[in-house]
Length: 103
Image 1 (cartoon, rainbow, N blue to C red):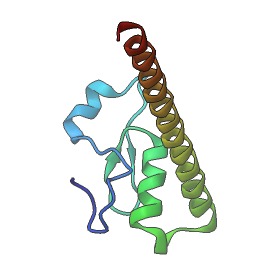
Image 2: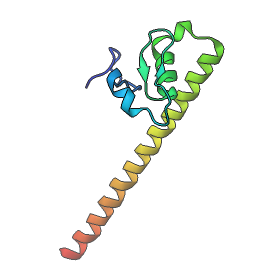
Image 3: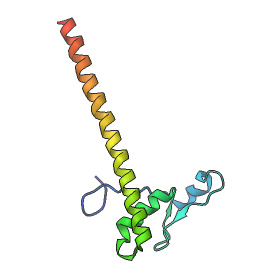
Image 4: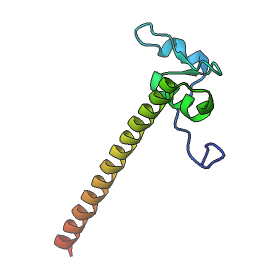
C-alpha cells in the first residue's frame, strides 16, 4: 500500500501538472499550495494538503479551513463505508434466501 511513512493512504489527490490545462473546467486555474507550489484540482485537496504537510505554518483561518476539509473528507469516507456495508448485508441475505429456496 502506497502512502506516507505513518502507514496511512494519502488523503489528497495530486495530478501531473500537464493534465491541468485540459482538466480545468470553466477556465478556472488549478489551485496551488502557497508554501510548496504543488498543484491540486480542487481547493479542498489543497486545504487537506496544507493541514497535513504544512500544519506548523498555518494561520488560524487556514487551520480552520483544513479542519473543515478533513471533516468533509471523513464524512464522505463514512458514507462510502455505510453504502458498502449495506450492499454486503443485502447481498448476503439475498444469497441466503436464494439458497434456502434452492436447497
